[in-house]
Image (cartoon, rainbow, N blue to C red; front, top):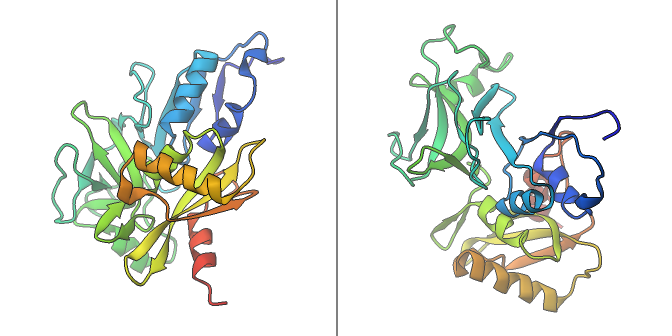
Length: 271
């Protein structure tokens, strides 16, 4: 903090590494605000960071196609794991599988009101360059469909579930990767992880966890069973990862987002 930094913004990946350090040794801390975006923030990361620093992580949601669309603003109390509330710049709804606004607690796709072409809200993209087919696929019936799933609680806070193409359908259950990842990250052996699906003849797909272990832990069959039991207790028995792979690093974008699609593609490659 030599230069008196007051605001720090980083993706959750960075905070997951930070909480493993001795934050009490930071010295004279000038930080006032810590902000995160780019991917969902696990509640356990929020809780540990707050306990060690006294600072609340303020989460926001946006895309390359938008500015900040949903966020936890300075006048709001953060709910660990929630993205916050819609920006006044946009009209946002969660649209369910029937094309209707989702009820409280019901999952739906995050959609932004756009109106006619050429009348987009300030800060929203006007379409994909030289790709009208993709534009028409996400821009329909007066809404821009983000491809991200969430649900809204009774206080109006939005909770991220996952990308529509990241959701796992196993034995008839819909499983969001974020919830399983948040459960795993609570275990001291897990530094970070990614939840994906692997095709299965019986269940259609099974849940797979790709795990980076914290320092001092080694992968073993005993640890796999321990992590599986941990997820069963924290979430639900049907959500536990039936397959766990230990790796040294996870594939990420330049901004720190985990590339689950890269893991899925690797798992479905023909030997």
